[in-house]
Image 1: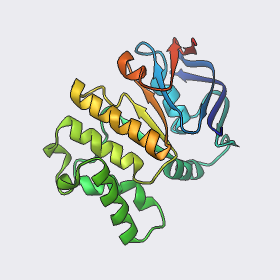
Image 2: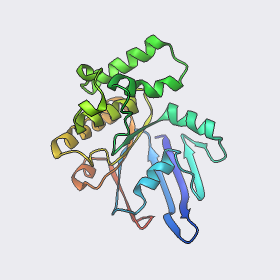
Image 3: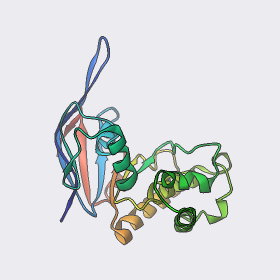
Length: 224
C-alpha cells in the first residue's frame, strides 16, 4: 500500500518575544492511501497544527515531510501552493466560505488556479454539487444557507479538484448531531467509493470510532 503522507520526527515551536510554545514534539506518522484516520486529543494538544503541517500550510521547526514519497522541504511557496491545489482538499470547522460568492462560485474557486477550460470547470462544479445534494442552492449565498449546507459547500469545494487527500479540521464541530452525521456519511462515501484518503481532527469519540484508525495527541506528542 502506498504511503500518502509521511512525517518523521516533526516538531513545531511557536515563538514570541517572551514565550516559546512547543506545539508538536517529535511526531512520526504514516498515512496510507485510502485510509480514513481521525486525530483526537484535548484542546491545545496540537491537532490543528499537525493537520496544517500535513497540508503544507505550516512549516515544521524540524523533521521531514514526504507527500507520496516526495520530500517537500525546500520547496518554494509557489511549488507548495501547486501541490496543495493538485493533491489536497481542506475542510474547516468554520467553513471559510467567501460571503460575496454564491455556492457555485465558492465551490469552483480551487479550479480557477488550474489550466482548465471553462466548460470543464462548470461540469466538475455541477457534478460535485449534485454529489452533495446542493444543486438547488447553486445561486444562493452563504448567508442564505444553514450550517449543515455551508459545510456541504465546504466539502464540495474540497473535493471538486478530485484531490487524493482530504484534511478535515473538526468538520462537524459547529453542527448539530444530525447534520454532523450527514457530513460524516459524505466523507465516508468519498473514502469508500472514490478511495480518497481522509484525515479528520475531531473531539467526537463516536465519529472517531467510525474511522479506520485513531491517532491520539497529548501536549504535542503522539500517545498511541
